[in-house]
Amino acid sequence: MTYLQLSDEIRRKGSFLCVGLDTDIRLIPKHLQNCEYPLFDFNKGIIEATAPYAVAFKPNTAFYEALGFFGWKQLEMTVSYIKEHYPDILVIADAKRGDIGNTAEMYARCFFENMDCDAVTLAPYMGEDSVRPFLNYEGKWSVILALTSNNSADDFETLTLAGDPSEQLFEKILRTASGWGSKENTMFVVGATRPEKLLGIRAICRDHFLLVPGVGAQGGSVEDVARYGLNDHCGLLVNSSRNIIYASPGEDFAERAAEEAEKLASKMASVL
Image (cartoon, rainbow, N blue to C red; front, side, top):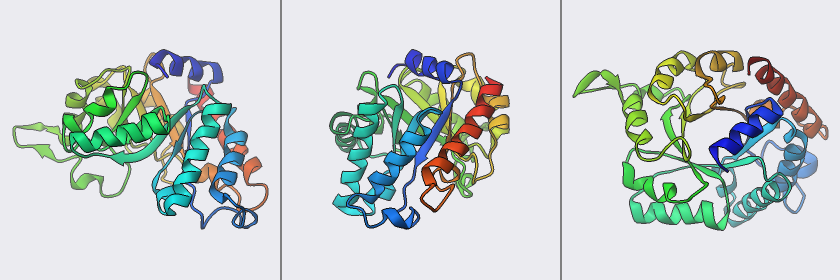
């Protein structure tokens, strides 16, 4: 999916919502837990219910890898279902991979060739050769961690650099990694819990898409993210996971997920 195609889909739907499929076998409704493929059946219900409002789905691979082959199979089934039924919706594998070049090449083959995901999240701390194999795929996206929303992010990400005490580590990542690719194949992860940082981030990467987790359960708001982070093409994918997919523990889980997705999409439409 190209930059223009993603921008057009956002404009068409009036939404920049990314629904996170962090599907925990322990939290899905009890009536699904004894199905042959419980994660997939749950995901299918969520996908069908939220597709009118979402421009991206982001399965977090850890929740599938934890179940071994059985979980990985359902991850593949989920991605295939989205690609077949909703080809205009971006699929982001939230895998946070980051390793030396030849290993990175295998990860890129896994997610881009074998699974046909549109994007994958990457940790850039081993440098360009750990990201370059992903950037070599035309029409695919590298989503690079920059300033995350977790409580311990300040342990490293906001440290100042010895060579330039005015620059923090996450800003160095943005400046350097922006040069590895372009706005056409590179996004950055910036947490919604730090919306005021988005002004400075936009000064570094004005045109890039930003994947923004942390709205909902982690306390971030659509309005604050939009105020500081929107660009001329929107340039935002705001992710919500738990608030949407676990809106109800019962048989109405899909209907309640649709309601929560619609609420967020409505807020997005009002700020676009």
